[in-house]
Amino acid sequence: MKYSEMTVEQLKAEKDSLQKAFDDYKAKNLSLDMSRGKPGSEQLDLSMPLLDIMHSSVDCTDDSGFDCRNYGMMDGLPSIKKIFAGMMQVDPESVMVGGNASLSMMFDTVAAFMYKSPVEGEKPWQEINDRKFLCPAPGYDRHFGITGYFGFNMIPIPMTSEGPDMDVVEQLVSSDDTIKGIWCVPKYSNPQGVTYSDETVKRFANLNPKAKDFRIFWDDAYCVHDVTDTPDTLISIMEECKKTGKEDLPIIFSSTSKITFPGAGVAALAASENNLKFLKEKYKYQTISYDKMNMLRHVKFFGDFDGVKAHMEKHKAILKPRFEKVIEKLETQVKESGAVQWIEPNGGYFVSVDVMPGTAKRVVALCKEAGVVLTGAGATYPYGDDPKDSNIRIAPSYPPVEELDGAMDIFCIAAKLAAVEKLLA
Image (cartoon, rainbow, N blue to C red; front, top):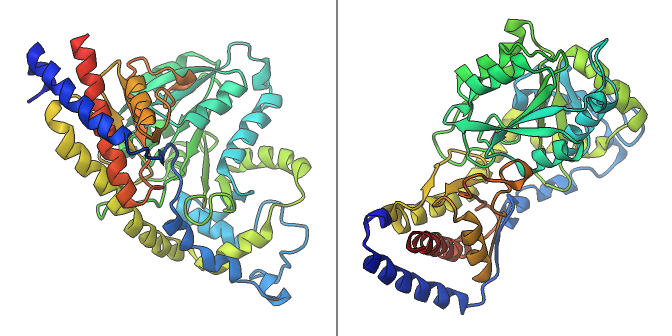
């Protein structure tokens, strides 16, 4: 029976029952972490052979005979550019390979635009007093952290089942030249797991921004991260922008952080010739070269893009039961109450759950009280401000399945308990 249909007496009885179940779990003194989308140890074990791949100077040369132990090739090895080109659906010539974190490359790109414009005659972003950035929400808290750090006014953009609300995006960017960019996680968005539809990608490629230096920050973090046997498909933003003659709009980012080792992977960006020329001008003063030994290890480990896809099938075998466990618990424990809604993703690292409006902070606090750590309520919105106080991001990858089972029991009890409290109040 839905909570909204219950009498006050029924709600009070439900509250007493839920409180007892919650207290029972609390007495177990559990310590479970579902706060970040971290690969579990089983996933990390998949890439251990990568560490034993090179044993002599011969092993340290790439296809061209270049000795990767030395300086040079500031923009990365051609062999790993080919792999990233397959991941990001671009030409290898469009790729620049960096260090271990795509987030660093995003930060560096915003920083570059802050101090020098990529468009002749335009002011650097730091000179725009009322500079703005569009932030599809729910979204990735670290994206919002970057633009917040650089003093942007962040404008939340509603998310739909096909991606950001493009009616809103088109209207805003065409009318305001202080809007300088938009964050996008186009495949299996963080946290909802939404993949942008073909129409959405094409509308991005057809944008007519009033700001000549407007850029789409296309974070393709989960481009190969399927967790079901019915994966989503995403068309190439770069190919669509070539059709419209607007190749300068997107800058695409990706990495192997959740493919091999999060702290020791390889990151890359892809961009137009104009954007690459602009960015390399900064990078040539920032670094002589990134870790080409690590790039080469990854090339030897994967071989090519097909090797990446085969490796990700192993990840899927580990992650699929975890995602199924989360959905199973939501279906069996909270669906009938009508107090919780969620999106069942085909990939990515999260399950986005909307609890009863006004209760997300309470649910997170209850879970913490019972030993389950979740991402903070509001984190998926700019400034940490969820206007409905309803969205919670569940990250099922890190805990073992048996721990996840208990953690989801606690989450479901907490979500229902907070809902009943809200209704009785």
